[in-house]
Length: 435
Image 1 (cartoon, rainbow, N blue to C red):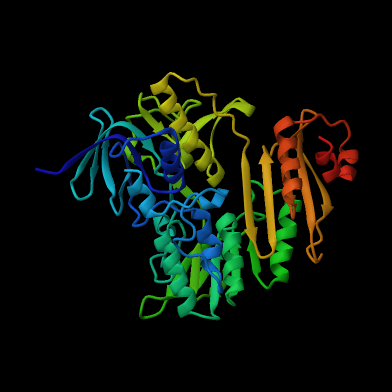
Image 2 (image 1 turned 60 degrees about the horizontal axis):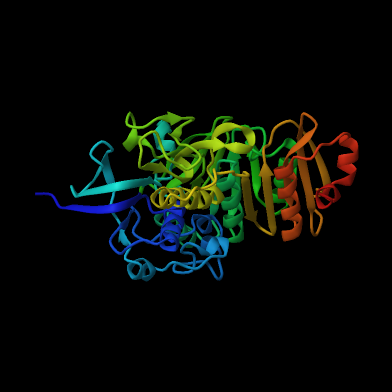
C-alpha cells in the first residue's frame, strides 16, 4: 500500500512563489500540519534571481542560507527551521508525476500520494534545452543551463575547472546578458551569440540595446548578433570544444551557457483545467477554472486589470505578489472578508557589471530616448518612454536612484497625457519627477 498524506493546503513547487505563499499563510494564520510545500528541489524556497548574479561572483559569492526567501524584497529570511516552527511541512526532493484534480490527489515519482483540499500550483518554468531541438552535440559536457541551484552549482564548478578559458553564451535575453557579465567578471574570454537583431528584443528598443551591446563590447565581451548555434564539437571525453554557428563561424569553447527561454510547467494539468496564452487561466484571485485550485507565478495567465487583457508574466516581482494575492483570496473566502482584485503594474529589472535598469508598464507605441546613453560615460543614466494614443504607457530607466525609479513607476501607473514628443525627450526624467 503506497503511503498517503493529507493536508488542507498544498503548494506544488518550491520556488519564489511557494516561499512567499508560505509566508502569507503564516501571516494570515495556519494551523500546524495544515500546509505542505512539495518541491523537486533539495532546498527550501530561495530567491532565484541570485543564481545569475551574486551566486557567480568570484569574491564574496552569495550562498545559502544567505538568499532564502524573502530577503530579495527586504523581508525576513525563512530558514528551513522557520517552516517546522510554523508547522508547515517541507517535502523536498519530491517530484510529482501525476495530478488528479477530480480526486484532489498528487502522486510522486516514488509512488507516494498526497491529497489536499486546496491546491496552489506554483510549478514555475523549465528551461528550454538545445537537446529539445536535436542540435548536434548539444548533449556534450559543459553545455550548461541555469534555472535551479543544482544548475548554478554545476556552472560554478565549470567556472573553477576552466579558469581563464573561453566561454560562449547562447541567447541574448536576461540570462544571456547577466551570465555574459558574470563570466567576464570571472576572467573568461566571452562571446555572446543570439539570432535576433539586438539583445533583449522583447523589451529593449534598438536604441536601448545599442547602449548595452556597446557597454559589453567595451568590457571585452564579443557580441555576435543575427546568428545561432547549430552544432557543437566535443573531445574524446565528451567535453565541448567548439560551437558551430549558422553563418559558418566556429567558436572555441571550454564552457557554453545556454539561455534561450523557459516553458511554464503545466503538463501535469493538461486537459483538467482551462489554459490560455501558454499558461493556466485564472481570475483576479488566481483561482483556476477548477474551484479550490489556484495557479501563481510563471504558470498563471491572469487578468491584467490596467490593460484589460489576459497576460502571463515571467518575473520574480509577479511571483511574489501573485502568491500573496492567492493566499489572501483563499483566507478571505474562509473568513468572508472581501479581497481586492489583483491590479498589477508590470515591473522588470536586471543588474550586470555596474549597471542596473528598471522598466514599468507596457512597451507598446512610439518611443523616445532621453538622458546620457553614452556607453563610455563614467555614470551613464538614460531612459525611454513608450507613448500610445497620446499617453505614456511604459518607462525604462538605467542608472536611476530609488526615488527616480519610483517616479518612472508612477508614470507607468498614471499614464499621463503627452502632447509633444520633442518636449518629452527634452524633459526626460524631469517629466517623471513632476507627476
